[in-house]
Length: 82
Image (cartoon, rainbow, N blue to C red):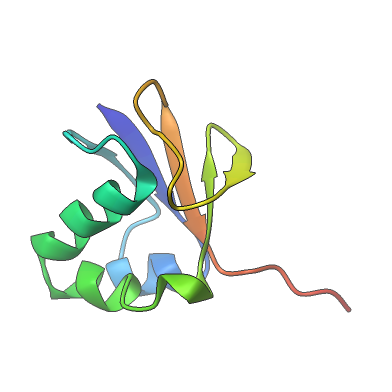
């Protein structure tokens, strides 16, 4: 099981802030594909991953990153300054 966290508009589209996911995914990309196949709200939230950032175990990383020993994956929009 892995904790998946959603922030800002990602959370709004999916409707929950956090969930535990049982997955066979070995990368963030694979996890996203599994989530998108669940139902339409996930497909909508992950329709454009270029508009998202991801952190694995609280470290900012790429969607190609491994999640094999990860405890947590978080998705959020890019932060803006100002």
